[in-house]
Image (cartoon, one colour):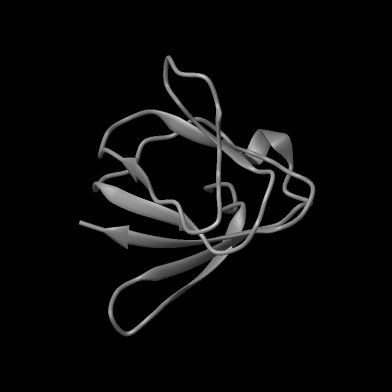
Length: 91
């Protein structure tokens, strides 16, 4: 049985994904992972969450600033003090 995902999401009619991570997400749920498709991730509000790519230092997630994640690239999100909501556009 797979572990539950550390977020809730909805998919809009145009295919954009709106995903929300809870401030209460367990650290072990926010694991290093790879995605199957290239994607742009855009925070929808001010946040102190961060994203970290393999072999790089964490970077702040700033409202409205897109982060590109290549398919197959190891990455993770680092929990902040509030919830995190992002828009995801897969290519």
